[in-house]
Image (tube, rainbow, N blue to C red; front, side):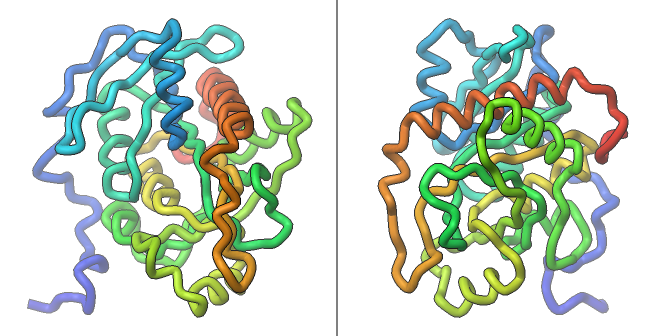
Length: 267
């Protein structure tokens, strides 16, 4: 048997999985076609505590994850949920959302800043992701980086620009091992053009591309690895910035879902 050096490089990407999300979920009749994956738990809790209703409940060994129905600024229904932490769980939840009928997804959450100019709360639109995790290789052929959907970049730029919010489009270093972000790797990733570090983006870009759905992502510059020492910067208590970026992601998901499929992987 002639096998590659790493199992992640095995070439069976065209085959369907034995387990499929469509066999495990029941699609609600009124499921929105747009969703926001929000990594800010207090924001998701606030959505659930308001007028939103639960469209579905996803069950894992972590417990129950409700999928809430929110509404964008123009009134379009948008599903909202917390996708957990790490690439595997985020990809699982994306697969389930697609099985439920979602076709447009915008992610919003914090990411570690790798550049000094990315002060706490600065907005970063995902432009590409460096694949230092494993999940993405189950969805796309081996490569060092993956480009984000250009449609997602465009709609997020439009929404942030309309709100007068400064932003940069940047590359995310997606890692599985938050405690193995060594000084050497941080320096290398910065040399490769990475602006932030996260744990999900590469996997979600890869999975969305294989599933044929739209995916864009908005980061809040959170803690910092830009200097010689890690700085927490109190990013988890930056409530106004976190809530504000969620509102922008919600608006972007609404606008993108309403746009025709003229660009991106689903066209």
